[in-house]
Image 1 (tube, rainbow, N blue to C red):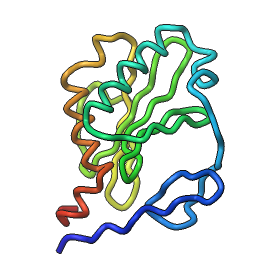
Image 2 (cartoon, rainbow, N blue to C red; image 1 turned 45 degrees about the horizontal axis):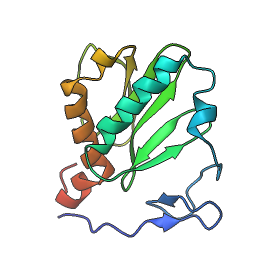
Image 3 (cartoon, rainbow, N blue to C red; image 1 turned 135 degrees about the vertical axis):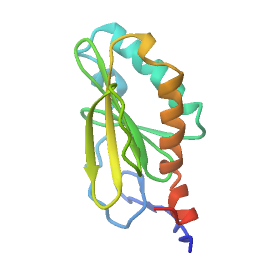
Image 4 (cartoon, rainbow, N blue to C red; image 1 turned 30 degrees about the vertical axis):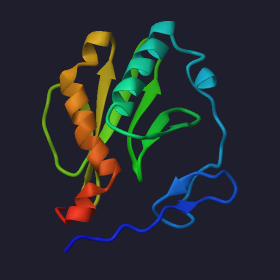
Length: 150
């Protein structure tokens, strides 16, 4: 049977929204400018294209943090970490997939997987990545809980 999704809890200090009450977070206020300050200009350009790809999936909330940027619908489903000359991007699925472009796959019990990719050029921001982001967006919406298909 499908789960009924509860309204998001809003932190009274910073205003961020979460699926559970009093979830740990830093209540920080960070900017993209400071996040990308130590990166080559091409990394910010790659991020802007990645962010457009994420937004093309539907409405999202972008959350700059101290060392990364997260994208959230109901839950966080994608993100990016700038490095000096490349961009690390990641997204969440509820099933394990194999692809040589994933340089790291982390299992988050009981049933989530976080996939990381290295983005070095605009060619890496392709249609295949866009399909993965659309799938991850459904995780961000928690559609798998609505359907009860975990």
